[in-house]
Figure 1 (cartoon, rainbow, N blue to C red):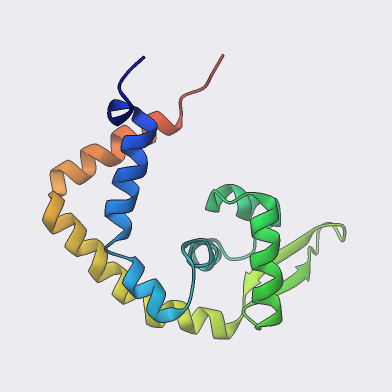
Figure 2 (tube, rainbow, N blue to C red; figure 1 turned 30 degrees about the horizontal axis):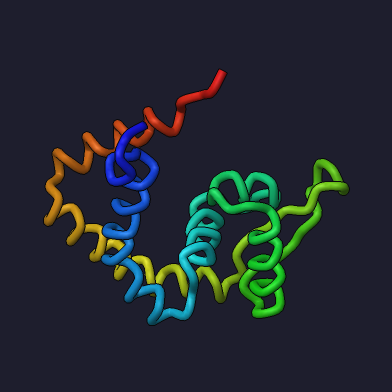
Length: 141
């Protein structure tokens, strides 16, 4: 067995924590958690989604997503609509208020991302992205 500090899962967690240091101050300023911002970002990028699709794209478990959706709906940030193709399907989308918040916050997130790229390097970032994509596509047989 590898030493703990050499384990892939721990290295990925450490890397995530280092990367999030660039973004957490912005999220704290807005009052959103990382998961909540992911929901806003994914809905902004995709328009309407079913909860199942949203959970998958955000990498959020259903119970956590249900809490976020409930809170966002109560706060007027998410709108639920029935699908015109199948009335059994509920689609989620951002309200105008949430879209406005995204427009205000995303430039700050982009600046933080640019800082991360500057510190790590554009080529290394591209290589890391490629490697992480390959790892995420691995399947256990």
